[in-house]
Image (cartoon, rainbow, N blue to C red):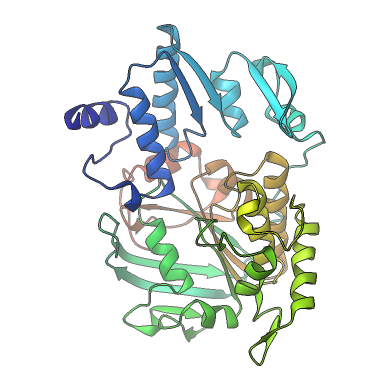
Length: 393
């Protein structure tokens, strides 16, 4: 079995180490395991839920060729995805669900991505567009940060340099497991740097400061793992709001929580970001994944941070909610914030980013203006094959 795992995973471009423990893998790497586990069984039916979220465009094309081959050999494939261009590219028929009900069936090739999205959410979708704000002075600077990973099978950060500027969104693209988790830990203060000035906020050294101290200076954060890291499952939405917003929104004074103000801010998040919940007194675990993601994004954005660090900001939300989050991020950048977004969704990064850098094997490529980039070029860099991959962004 071990040999078969290596053989099949490498054949399909989904390389896996069979000796890794699932608990040590990122969300994206676990998805690779699920795909390979299916392919090992010579299936007659495969049900796939967002299978390309961890793949470079080139790897996705390999998977599509594999799926077409499997279908031609008699295998049935049920393909669930919010990436509507993928649905149009590889599916013969599509069923659209909204609110747990079938609302339409269609031939994807006869539709556009926009028309499919409107069938999904039941209203006209206005895609987010970047306003082209002039970037201001550098707000956050990382200066040649190298840190060994604390995870048994993690990726060491190597000479990471970043300049995140006022009024801009800097996108970080990459296949899961290439140092995104380690980079996030450094940015939000869960890992400190040996030299405090290796990370600076508006010229002041913050490499030694933890998350709460960085929040007090105007930074807000959205970790990738929404249930357990970005939110405490057993706590209410109000309590989860207090955990991250108590400083900037003054929800606690002299050690006492202002319950009414905390509830008011929680309701503002629910209203402005269309979070479907029975009430803010309900637990985070009671929300669907997409609604919890909207709540977490709203909680951070509505604090009007000077710096926002967000990983996978639209993971699991529908097309309408994703568009609303994208617009909110663009507006926040337009108001003067500096935003760094780590995402495996290239369409997302190309939509909202001013510049994009790629992380591969713990290193960053130099950032490039989004207008100069193609999906193919980004995909090559994501695979670690770009010439001269260096540690400056």
